[in-house]
Structure formats: structure tokens, C-alpha cells
Amino acid sequence: MSIFIRTFELRSKALSLGNTQRYLVFHSLIRTFAAIMVQQIEITLKPKRRGFHLVTSEIVSQLPKLPKTGIVNIFTKHTSCGLSINENCDPDVRVDMETIFNRLVPENRPEYEHTLEGADDMPAHAKSTLSGVSITIPITDGRLNLGTWQGIYFCEFRNYGGSRELVVTIIGE
Image (tube, rainbow, N blue to C red):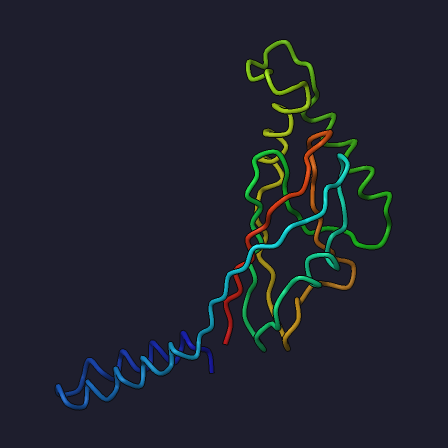
């Protein structure tokens, strides 16, 4: 039974009981929440050239044992890169994504004011906003529940971004 359904059932039951019985129900509720595991780690991705990179294996290899069911949220602590879930088979998709993003947000535009860090910096911030900086993936039977053709993309928008830090939050029961 879902922990959320169990919580709702126990709360509803408790509202109709006396104080002693209510205490027992809330004690049961506390035990139910104790079954939720929340774990947070930080991992580092190796430096990558500009582009879209399939990093599913690199991330999974750094994860602790996952709970039977739950979710994992992966968040990058940087403003010039992004995360996405996309095609994991044909590498041409990653090349095409780079082409699309470069056309959407070109470098060296005269209207850009934030230019002190290089021609690739302001476009990298805009691309990060478009791609997003976090993804959430369900956990089923102790593993990431990605579709057959899905993989985790790390989107490096700087020419020389360096290593990148990710925060991984695992919630499960």
C-alpha cells in the first residue's frame, strides 16, 4: 500500500477517535513515515567537451543501493549546463540536439550584455534555462525505471566547462 494512502487512512481514522486511541493511530503513522528513506549524495561528472553526452552509466555507477520503489532527483549545481532524458541509442540525436540549441541560442549576439566570461557564456546560461537543471526518475525494483530508448543526458553548454557537481536525492521505501 502506498505510504500516502496509508497516511490518509490513518489521519481520517484518528479524527473520529478519543485521545488515547488517537495517540495509537498517530504512533502508527510515525512508524509508517519512518519507512521512508531520504538519502542525498553529491557526485562529480568528469569534464566533457561542449555538447550532449549520454551519462546514464557514469551516474548509476556512483549511486548507492537504491530502494525497492521511489524516485531519484538529479540536480546540477551549475548555471551553464543542463540535464535531460532523451534517446540513448542513436548518437546522431545528440549531434542534432547540439545543432538545434546552437540555432535557438547563437553566440556573439550584439544585444547580449553579459559577455565578460566569453562568447559561449551567456548562450550557455540561456540553454541551461531551456534544458533545465534537474530531472526526476522513478525507481522500480531497485533500479532507475527508464524506458528502453531513454538515457540521461548531460548537456555541456560551455566550450570548457570542467568537472560538474551533481546533487542526487533518493526518496523511497
